[in-house]
Image (cartoon, rainbow, N blue to C red):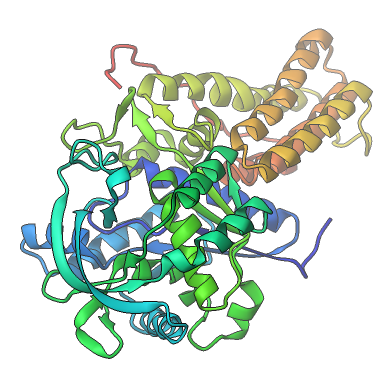
Length: 487
């Protein structure tokens, strides 16, 4: 089971530094953290990367509107994303910033030169419609009523002479790699969406902008042009692990085993990035996992609607693991999900306070009332049905995590909790105080704590301590719900 010789390299996307973190990126960071912790549990050599995407027009414009230097502004916002990893108990090994001139800049310049040497960089005049929100030019197929279909804002007409990357040269090869599974895209709906884009044909893409209109690293050999966002940002996955010097770390960890990304940047990770890697003769990532968006009360999150959910506020009010649980249990991983405070508090009270919290408190409370009770009285389960249930859950749990179905993995854990509650009631344990039943329940709770570790690490540790000390703190105090709340 344990294999220290096997590596597992996982990344999140790197969010823009034009605004503080919201709950959408919190979801992605937590999903990636589950995978990282699970593979650590398997004994693998895990490297987990996250960071921030700082160059580009979005950060530049917001900083200018605030009368700030863009680098100072990016420093502040990047700091908030870094703090978010701490607040959410994310186990990342590294945090890369695209303004990093020590690790990132030389790696990006090296990659540019590789693409250029392959004959895949050329300069031409261009006229196209640009979405600042996506940091991307839009083709006619992607434009709806003159607007970006994602941001629903008017596009900007841009006329410039820029460098381009020969994306079209690699589309057929990428299509084959996806179809034969060498580049796996999860879920299948996103795989099919990517294949549809490839079959329709992809144009070459702009890889630079003029220096007076953009913020970024200069194009090697042309100080009037700066590298465009995708050439600047996507290489973070290799710059952080030492691509520039091709260090031992780079050779050990690349290619990435999983890129965790949102659906709005899927094309860049499933088409642009693989094409860049093929041009540079580097291995492709093994899996690109694409999650959906989080809506609030059925509406898209937006500043204008005033419904942006701040993950810092949520954690302060409900606790780290309560936030992690809701996002992992309520949101179907590869689909859009909905957040409301009513749903959050309902899940909290039913599953956390009334579920795992209540079970641990009941069992330890009863055991405490039995004089001279020693745990364990047996080193194996005495109830064969409980043992069978746990083995069944372990199998389903493994399959669910490895197929990115985090919600189903949690559902399976709660099956053990339900079994234990039923077992207590059938045995009337509060009256009989049977030592052998408590023995089984201790083993079950220990297993629950172990299975919860990738999902709710703080709770898992509390359960472990409760078993060792035969005394439990209240894991999740019951909430007073507010049915009249709007969200």
